[in-house]
Length: 341
Image (cartoon, rainbow, N blue to C red; front, side):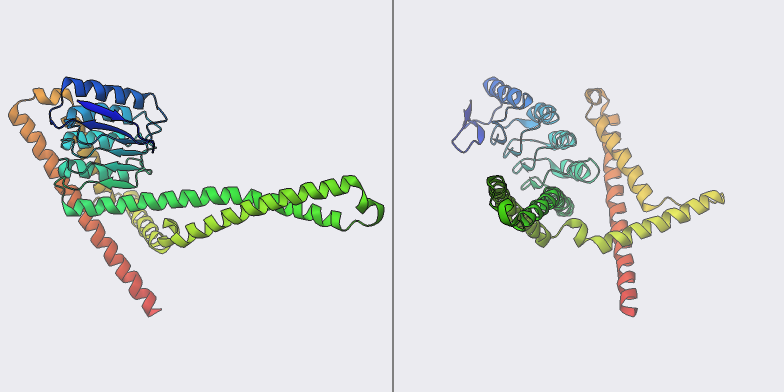
């Protein structure tokens, strides 16, 4: 049986009983929660669904809801018997979800297949909101976890960048308006004689004084927030030189490729082209494996397709290793050139 609890802190929890079977009653309760999520119930911003043992079946239903939900920010799926297929489905759903920032999938079994798909979602899938992802005890290769952590850090940095820009957009017009009010106050203070003693001038000065005080408080608050964000350092500021070198290198490679094409010469595919081609082939192969028709294939054909997916994953890892090695060589050369200068 599934129990729903809405405690005072506003965190919704769907708890399983001691048994570990996904019973009909539990499915019914799960469907009710998913319907709430589908309706974007604002009370469901923080949701715990641990120990439900929903498996890939429940993960598939949940993924459909995540694609349309815009209010859920934190989701706990601890100990739910979710396998690689369920992990991939949830990962793909996050490519269309822009609200979830924290996801706990610990004590499941999504493996390397699910974790790699999360990497693709964060790297190319357009998700820039997820900043916390717990994959403890999921039988995931440490190298994949390292890549995931790097991508999550990028999303965290993007969030800081966006918050800094939002803060600056609030601060600039406020400072401009404040300066205008201060100039009007100075002109009123310069008045002498009867004009300075008139009730209208006094009322206007009192109104301006109140507004200036309030706006000064707001400007100070936003300025402090801006300083904190700059202190944390935006991703762009921290990586500016590295980005500049990478863009220059990519530009030079592309120019060389374009020249060879114009001259009618054959050229080997660049690492970027190989990465893109491999990623597209891998995504297509994984998409086919998730189709209902895939289960109807013969055992030999399914095995052949699974071997193709494994080969593409190895190729993708090989290309990433080559890219890192090339980047390291380029940075070493650039560092040596700076020392020589």
